[in-house]
Length: 133
Image (tube, rainbow, N blue to C red; front, side):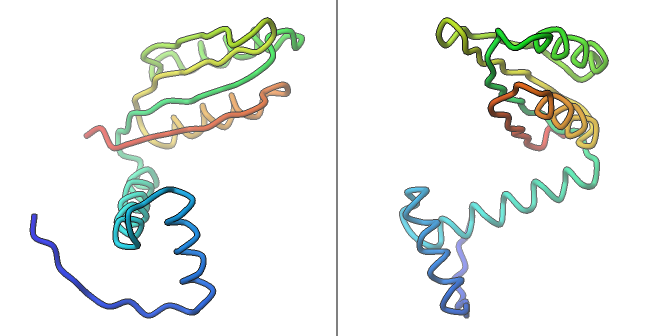
């Protein structure tokens, strides 16, 4: 694929933010960071268009939290048509990580992710999606 060069004018605060983004994410240069941000934006736009996407929901939680495992399972059963698999990892005596592999309409996967991440006791949750069509 051919590469085209062009100039970009940014306010000083945006340029500083871009440079910080480059450093924090260990991009080789600004161009690489801009490519990443543009591609990320395009993929997220496709999510809004409700295309078929695939991804994963990563959850970290303390399994001793009352009813948390039951709530996770109940919600996942409600969305069985978009869940491909789940993996459960025991990080230590109390903390677990669960990865839910998913594929389906973007709005459905986002809804599932929001429901799981919002359960009381979830310490961290993140949805990652990419186009699948």
